[in-house]
Image (cartoon, rainbow, N blue to C red):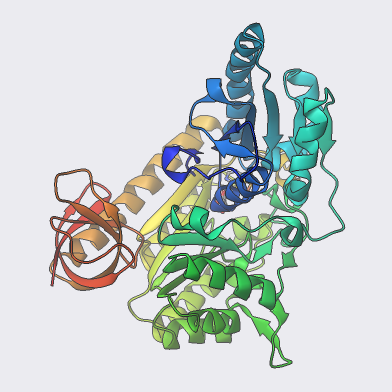
Length: 466
Ligand code: 5AD
Ligand code: SF4
């Protein structure tokens, strides 16, 4: 989980013509990639109202925090950030400049009323299902109102959110996210997402293909399909059959310009045969898969309501590797779920050793209000959670390092993304997401070129063009 100030100078959108006075919006994004995508779409919607992005809060007529509720710290960060922004708002008011403050995202959805109570400087609270109503909410707030929009909208927000102008997309680079599915019906007992993002909804094929074509036409070469449960995506195919994510990936790979495809995040229960076949037969589908297992003990998996056993997961990985032997796996892990014993935790270490992950996100369990896990008996002490997290992360880091070391000398393709930090350096993206640093320009931005990995750096690889 990273925090990103998304809309810096480079990604500036040009306000539409005829807008006499340009207003500025500052957007800060917390949490997952879907929030990054949502922030971009909100910025597009606001651009149509004459708002240009700024990286300076003090210059902003509108400040938007796109928040994450997944763990406790994430929500607390929002409140402390709001305290800081309130001071800037007061300082601007002293100069006769107004500032509208909006809180979007999952904290807004889960705690809208409480935010309004705890943070009087906040003007708008808007949940993820109603982003298409943001421009309206901003107008109401500027007229002096306080607006809460957290109902699940009946209309399809994607149809109501404006598409960015091609020029705006072009300046954002050669990789892009595309939300194809949102919400979750799995109800893992630790997770707030089914409550904040609502139930599982798939976008229709035609809408997804149209958005992908627009992105490709404006220079995007690598597309990452997003969904909380992305591999549960399904829709009516133009051939009259029901499509799953596998069929959708085959269709998207036909779009001229799209050279690489990825998807995230998947649930082990929804890896069907067609999707596994796509990993075997579709060269554009990158050999990298984020497939969270969370824990290795069957008792804990059951308590988490994951609805599969540790051996189910091992067998699934075997099937995926049989289809695509070079696939690299990434995972999410939770330590210290209520009732987790030392022996349960050892099972988590064992599954990590058995499967091998090239990348992983691991967290201490954080009780989320309203989820069944929070009500369970036998919560694990913080100190024990800390110890387990350290041991797990040490193992995961070793596996990551081994994987990177094993790549040295190997030939691979990279997507050229941008100039690097050092003089003459260029940065490309490997099939495994790790950035690859090249000492000379091996082609144009957006080209996919062959390189040989020469050495590993910190969180990166170095390579020479072939
Ligand atoms: N506590 C700790 N980690 C959590 N995650 C989700 N909910 C919690 C929680 N309550 C982790 C899971 C999930 C990732 C996005 O965040 O590992 O896959
Ligand atoms: Fe955070 Fe999950 Fe919401 Fe994404 S969906 S913002 S990770 S709570």
